[in-house]
Image (cartoon, rainbow, N blue to C red; front, side, top):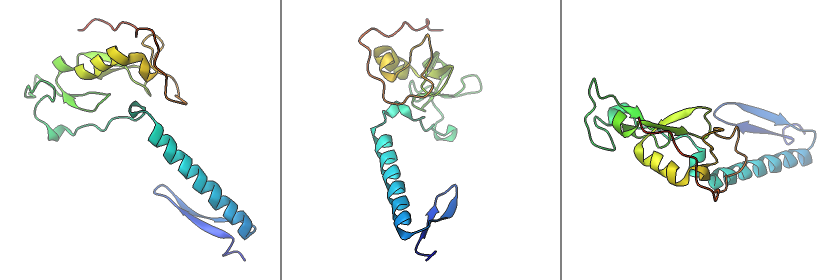
Length: 153
């Protein structure tokens, strides 16, 4: 019976019907999909917070630097910290550090730079080699000191 040996898969990106040769095969597919989805949810829950890109604060949500409180003007422009997503002025985001998922240095706010200086290698990032191409598992903290950062501009 084709109706009993098929099932629908619905997602935001694409929806489709999977047809199998038997109800036993249908149940095997359902179990495999459910197991894969459960493992994916567990992996996402176990991922370190820095494994995901931050949600940026909307420009319209703040007229002032979220670090020092200085009002943004035509000359004092707003910047997004690439690590936490906050809106900050140039003075509060003058440094760049490697960010996982990017091959180049990224602008960060002063608190995120300080966090990198204190725990830089814990994020699996080495300033001289850049971030890992595709981190398979959370990086373990290195007992050595993180590499020195370039001087503040």
